[in-house]
Amino acid sequence: MQMRYNREIERRWEQTRMLAAQIHNSAQGKKRLVTPKQIIHLPFDDNTEYPQWTQEEAEELIRKWPDIPTKN
Image (cartoon, rainbow, N blue to C red; front, side, top):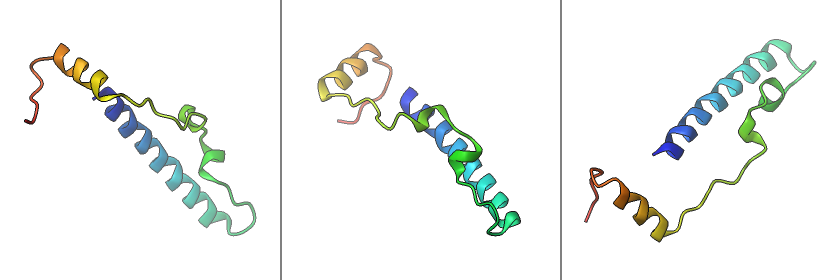
């Protein structure tokens, strides 16, 4: 759940910088186009790998929190 929340926040920042780049580029014409990464460099730009969990690790985490409903 934490990884999902973090990714949601990352997507919001990606959208923000994409809009900022589009607004900047539309106002500048072809004089000085910028990419979204040039406007706002985010910490996760350098890290493209997300942790991959095995099925056993996921089941172990689910067992730790028994109040989480599971689909059977």
